[in-house]
Figure (tube, rainbow, N blue to C red):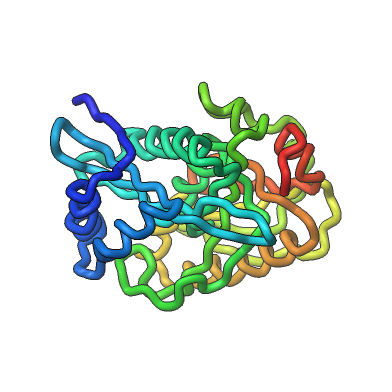
Amino acid sequence: MSITFRKLTEPAELQMLAALEGAVWNTKEVIPYHMTITVAKFGGLFLGAFDQDQMIGFLYSFPGYTHAEPHLCSHMLGFLPAYRKQGLGMQMKWRQREEALTLGYKKITWTYDPLETVNGILNIVKLGGIVRTYLPDCYGELNDEFNQGLPTDRFLVEWFLESGRVNCRHPGPAPSPKQLEHAPEALHYELVEGVPRPLSTQLNLESPVLLVPVPAHFQEVKKADMDTARAWRQMTRDIFQTYLERGYTVTHLVRDQDIVRYVLDKQPLTAILGDSARS
């Protein structure tokens, strides 16, 4: 199977997005063609993944503006079910970086659920994104299978496209930080019949590096016990909001069998990015 990626500019290709979006998300509520064609004309970026002539994946991004600086907002990335879990999402993101730099963008932003750690591994470990902002209940109530029953809290990922941090990950993920052995954990948990359950939070830690454990398989926690899932959402919300407001940055994840630990680092942005990239 040979998958190719390309920028979508032709009206016929952009018209294909609506049908593909509906198939990927199993919904009739899709972004209309008149929006995509307009965004494409004025600074947006649309990418398609193709298996021969069939579009099997897409990426939708549009111009954004935050704190007097323009950036690209990456809104949707999806593939048909038969093409998932093959590393195509990461290939699509690197192509997005290449095209965004050509358009003059220096940063791309997007959101993801911090309890969905597969996305965290991609966004932070493999791509080199960072997180400095927590958005509680970002989208309000959603009734799809991944979000139903919980507030839609999200991390805001910032991807500094020309930073040393990102450049060094292009051949492959950077190694795990070495200063984690004595880093304190901001959340205590226990395993009950294989299900991780949060017990208490530590909101007054002063260490330059902190660890925040979360479930490695959050959807399985939801299926086992929604009350436990809600507790994870609330406790991690308290932790991330508290420490990000104090100047910490999410810079890495460390994966274990049942738990994934977020690494929070209190360094200047230039040190985290590995160069003098602007904030």
